[in-house]
Image (cartoon, rainbow, N blue to C red; front, top):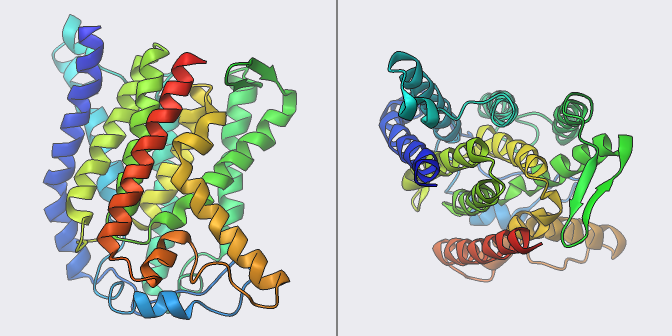
Length: 353
């Protein structure tokens, strides 16, 4: 038990300090090359051509001059930590160093590959947005292209789980495992798309980092009690990388997480949730992500079917609170609190079910 705890917390700490160490290098590059949007604001998206004037007014001075691609800190620190621990076990072979190595084929290869591959795709989108005309959609990959991209990643992941890992069941809390056969693949794709849509929570300084840290910490705890120690260590390392990013992303943010962070984290979260067989607890553990997506759907549907009438001043909901006059830091802190509470509720549910 003691060595397992060390195996989880020590790499997480290494990831945190690794993230702090590489941040000055990344920051220098991002500011030197002006890696930010050249025009603040965004289009409405989701088939809505009315624009987002309230959002654009709230953020007209925030997006220009603050670099994107801060998510590099997260996945780079995770990758560096995994490599460092693995090298340590090879250069100094021994009982302790071997046990500390959490790079395993059955638990960490797949989520690590997903994190790096999806983050690199997100990085391409960030670069396109920076070099484009500055619009949220026109300056990067279109919404339709990003949806196709996420569904493609989800198909590969679902296919791997179904055919390579022989997984076709979904764990239902308190009821057990239910086999859904080949429907497992489209279900996997749907979950990944749902989590990806929650990535719009990356809209206020510090908000997405705190929320994602709580979510991955909860799944680290679930994996630990499932005796998936390597997977628990991997989730904890992600938390360490997020905390390093968050150190520089609290208001005023030095950089934004952007797509290279959120795409990597949401797709990896999908893989982790299925590996722990607690995917149906995602609406609880990742409640802020689903709530954010739901408010977007409600807003767009209301404007479409109620002659342009809105439910929220601006969607997603964290911007609604901004528009009502809440300071950004208050929105962020309260979302952190909600995220922690729901993550704990979800983890407890997983442990007792």
